[in-house]
Amino acid sequence: MPADAVAYTAEPVPRRSWALPSFQRIPKPRRRTELGLLLFVWVIVALLYALASLGAKNSLPPHAATFLVVLLALTLGVHVANRWLVPNANPVLLPLAALLNGIGYVEIVRWNPYAAQQQATWTLLGAALYVGTLLVVRRTRDLDRYRYILLLLAIILILAPLLPGIGYKVGGAQLWVKIASIQFQPIEIAKILLVIFFASYFADNKELLSIPTARVGDRLVLDPRPLLPILGAWLFAIAVLGMENDVGFAMLLFTLFIGMLWIATGRFLYIVIGLVLFALGAFIAYKFFSQVHIRVEIWLDPWKYASGKGFQLVQSWYSLGSGGVGGTGLGLGQSGRIPELTSDLIYTAIGEELGFMGTGILVIAFTLMVGAGFHIAQRARSDFARLCAAGLTIIVGFQAFFIMAGILRLLPLTGITLPFAAAGGSSLVANYILLAILMRISDEAGPDWIDPDAISERRSVARAPSSP
Image (tube, rainbow, N blue to C red; front, side):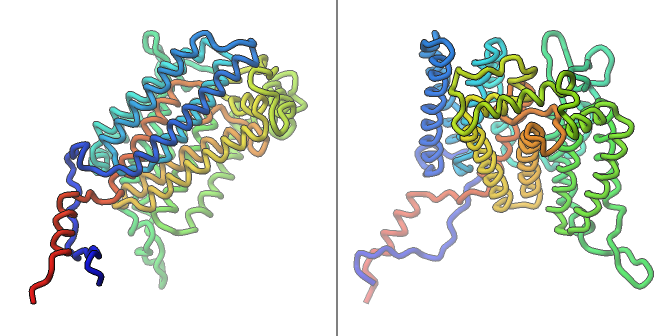
């Protein structure tokens, strides 16, 4: 070995303790990557914001400087929190969320300035709760300990819109709760709590759910008894959502349950059973639930309802068609009369003004986010963390898929929102909390902390001449 070579001993490097080390002693290559990506996103959003105003009003936004300063301060503030609280977490999740949030905000400002003011407030609250979640959830195993308390809280949140006096309908679905002047959808938080409960239960019972232990005649089969409690909780949630006429979240919870069950056990039989149950449930919902029936009818023949309940979907196709490949240009679209353009149909607004290229950016961003989420699940250090990360990723991925597929007529249109991009405070805040939990899981699976002083000492020992 050359004299100047550096040799490393095989001694194990101490693991990073749960306490937060100081800034100076933690290498943060991932955070440097994150900072660069966030600044790149900041430039993109700032340019889109200016172009939208130039296209619509032929002038720069009146408060452009304030917007840019607030955006930069928010970006750097959340990044500093990540450097402090989750130094080893995935570096691309937050920039992707910021990109989706920024593109959506530009379109919301374009079509609904009042909703844009609310969206800005909800974004600030979401960022605050993101940091708060990282402060409260210092270890993912703490969530595992309180699974039944979290399940009870999820049930209360799901039932809240049915309570007289506080729950009310919007667009045929009774999903909203109004307390004083605050309106929100409790199901957005409940879905995260259900993920934690499912992950905890499946992690504790994965052997019983995947290994045949019950004897029927001369054959061993899967014992269905461990599945009954979790199946009951899931059926209860689906039944309540059916009573609330919430098609979108019912589909999302069904996909979440079957997906997490398959990931936990690895048995394809559960996928087959899930497809059979889905077909049976879809048929029953089509026959007995009016909102499901009309949505399927619009899906099968939208032109029949083009001047009525199908007006929203048909007009969105005209807007997407006028956008073409490159879009009409920011500020030059004509989709203002489409109902719920900035919430349910934000994908249409982006597709018209940014074209196929703009919607392609959305799809790529969600694909990268889902890939990062499953990568975090793959590297998680416990079964609970692995299943929790997978479940949270399933929520983001399939929620985006369901709304985009509904607009493109691959599936019946549902009323769920496009994560991070669409107007809606409940969804935005919940998604930032979801993101924080993913970042915590990622940080726990990150590289162990290496003490620079210990490395320097080992290098000195390795360079020292050996005794004759």
